[in-house]
Length: 88
Image (cartoon, rainbow, N blue to C red):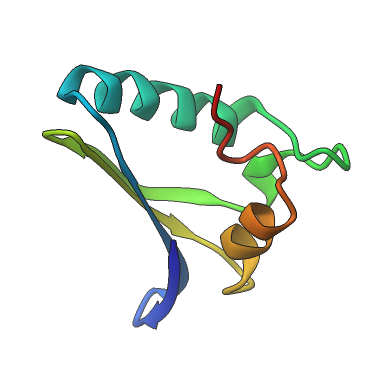
């Protein structure tokens, strides 16, 4: 997970490695659903924090480029163990 700034604005990048390409594709659909219709543990819709700029499953890797207002948004969600990226 990382953060950056370009001519479009702040963004977060999320990279998830999977055992199989099929798992990466399945997780792509899950991540899209979480961002578009899920909420943080505090009840705030993720779509209020993120806009999907690009999301792709390339082999066993899932790469999501997310537009954000605050560069720490995804990193905070990860360190707070929030519901953006869950395992199980």
